[in-house]
Amino acid sequence: MLSRTVIKNVRIIDSGAELDKTGDIYINDEGLISAVGESITDEADFIIDATGLIASPGLVDMHVHTRDPGFTHKETILTVGDCAAAGGVTSLAAMPNTKPAIDHIDAIKYIIERAKHSKVKIYPVAAVTKDLKGLELADFAQLKKAGAIAFSDDGEPVSNAKMMAHALKETSWLGSTVLAHCEDKDLSAAGIMNEGAISQMLGVEGIPCSSESVGIAREIALASALNARVHICHVSTAEGLEFIRFAKRAGVKVSAETCPHYFSLNEEQLLHQDADYRMNPPLRAEHDKRAVIRAIIDGTIDAIATDHAPHTTQEKLDFYTAPNGVIGLETSLAAGITYLVNTGYISLFKLIYMMSTIPAQILGIDAGTLTIGSPADIVVFNPSERWVVKPELFQGNSRNSPFKGMELCGRVKYTFCDGNLVYQDKI
Image 1 (cartoon, rainbow, N blue to C red):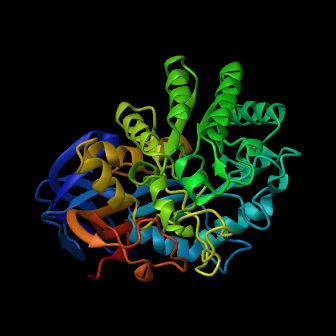
Image 2: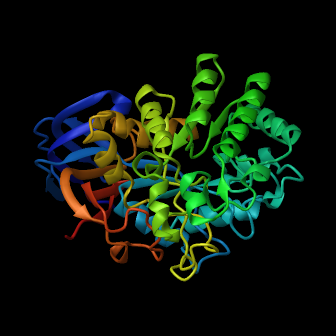
């Protein structure tokens, strides 16, 4: 039986219920929220005085690479769950670029079974094409029935437009969404960073913004023609955002996400020739970063996800040959507070909306709210506490954080998942 817990004197922000007030939250012994109000006096086993802190729905990260199965030397479902709990993330979508890829029922069952032992809820995203090779569509109906909440070939865009059209049509019939990695690989070629003055200065191949925007334009055109849903992953370019903005105004069923590194950092970080700042899509120019912020403000971007992509320290040693990808589960909330809320671009209420309520709605999962009767998935955090990012203290195995050594504002103090206390800050 779970402990009955009261979180007292906390500022409660629930964007799903349009709630922002100070009060108490009661978690019953079934792991559900049974009361939200002032001066709750029900008998409890565990009482937290959260004066000065904020409680919100647990974050929902709709773009995470667990590396499990197949690459467990980098991370596992369990260690990713540890990272998520420390970052206030209580639900996450596990991308399918594992080995084997998540393109068959047994792979879905593996994720679900392993996730039972995780601190947080981990939902499998199944592949669009078999083995992510873009040659044959996966069996969407069977994969959804087995537990897939969405479909993606993330990291390997579906290059054949006709095949993507079929995927969008079939997944829309099923009430699911394709999470589209938009990239023209012919344009990206051998690029390892943003194409521009800095790539020229370093003498390395660059990835043009057009590689992303061409892919976005195609997915939007297909979704429009088919009246289908599509979600655009990790948007990083000004021109790509313009396509999404126009499509939304035209009524296309398109949603979009970006990641903390795209609204907080730019390509100048690559001057260090440190592979921990290399990811795909790459850090862009300052004007692209500002365009991402504008798109967050005006609603062109719906959600903030991390694209958490663990790699070993050894793999990241060589700037030129290292794999792309950075981690972000333990820094996403603080990065949002530091670079979006404290700068006055958006409210804390909207940040939670973009990091919890909206991604839960896009994925169709029971999360993103503190309403009575809902699962007690809660993050309690101090919005003003400053801390220096020290990757060696992270909960997982990987250390490839683009925020290493930086001072961020906002620290997770407690995380509850289904009423279980799965993280408590000891510092």
